[in-house]
Image (cartoon, rainbow, N blue to C red; front, side, top):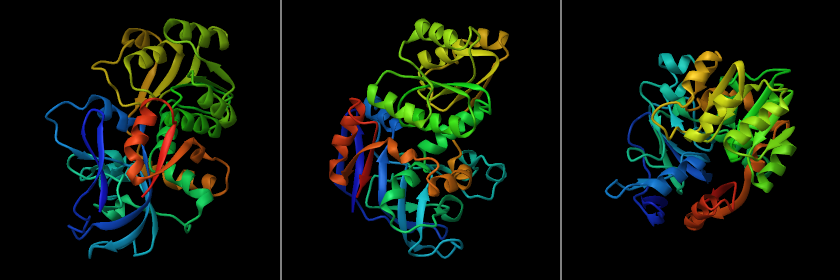
Length: 344
């Protein structure tokens, strides 16, 4: 079968690899119908160090179940399923608490240990606890939005939850990538009265406005902080949804949060210590977030997708075949595309 393999910084290839197969009784085999490239895939694409082992990329997918192990009880061949970016058993204490990304038997797709979903087929460990059966067939109109439930829509929602977005509150979203745009959807869905998008790419800003952004701040650093405070009567926002993961983004987050506010960070952090800890302390800020337990959020978000109340699939602005994946990485890295869908 064909699959995407990252060999080094900027060196991503689509190659023939051994066919995916069942290994454990709790496995399922899924034929991938749609996958995508994530902003977090760009970190190793840019920063992978010489000597690191190759890895099969991709952690977001929708597909059709081709086979199940003898220990799988909730899935059958032919089911259309969404695959969250993390696998989980669904039975441990953390899964029961809705924190599937901390499953004691779980892990993440697209790592050195577990092949990723930018491929023709994929083995799913702990299939009963990981896969979510979708009540749809091959519906072209819905598939893009359903695919976002594997990561970016659930991650944007997680940022909003961690930032305590609620009705009548003010919110700011840092980052105009796919997760940031989905965070705008999430903030609006949860009732935020004012939603400030912090970004500077015109195409993304236009989409953010359609999703519910009320104000746009294109400045950076201290100028951005000053502008947000100007838009909020000098006090800052109740909720900051940090969707980037850089030190600058986090410093901005602590600068624009009002006293008693909350920061939900879902950008993978590329810093050793959280910046701005002293002002965060004196302003009684709550800082939360992490890898989104998207498996726990699918049930909540799915009805709104099926009914068309939210359309997160609009973040996909390029669709490619599997052999075009290297160019898809280039396009996202060079900000020519917001998010690339892959149809193997």
